[in-house]
Image (tube, helix red, strand yellow):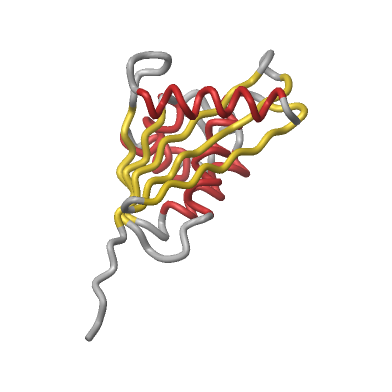
Length: 149
């Protein structure tokens, strides 16, 4: 008998930076069935946007097989890039913004796109520093990671 695999994963991500640029941290909370996993990381000199991207990258990197991912982020930068077609337009324009400037953080965007294509990801925008307990939790973990590096 073949066992059915539940491949649904709920993810919450957040990035933090003290100064912009400055020291930063990121965190991701992954829920897979009744299991939960937290991952964090930090960099000595970075930006908030890089930490938001790194949180999503970190979350998708730990998945061992193709999953249906509901990724929650309070970063409009990350969410709009996927949901509003920014990435497709950047690629069409040779990684240039609408104002013809190079897209920032291309290294992380390219890594995130590659990981995103390995899964079925739904990007969900949540309001930061509001009443979402999971978002508040990853916010605290990202700040902690930044401080403890």
